[in-house]
Length: 93
Image (cartoon, rainbow, N blue to C red; front, side):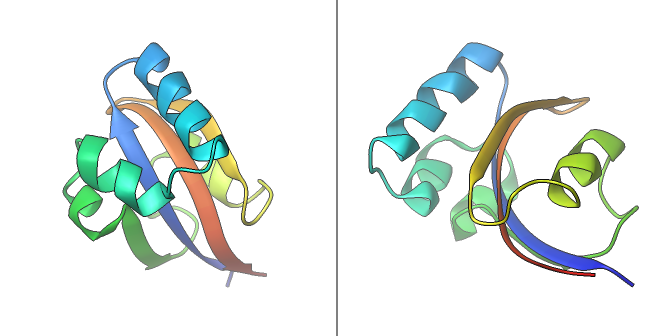
């Protein structure tokens, strides 16, 4: 079964998500941005979510993680929780 590891940043608005993505693309460390801004408890660990399989996360999140480019910051991705920036750190088929 497919597995992925990812980290994410969760914020309440799309605008906030876009601003944080620009910071990361400008060279600020993803984990640092997650620790300062993410509303998810995973922010304390740099946004790391560990390893998971399809179906363990909400559909919108899963769709990105299991089809997006590994190593690239993806988003904003809207879910019932808010807006996410997602970085897929690894994925196996």
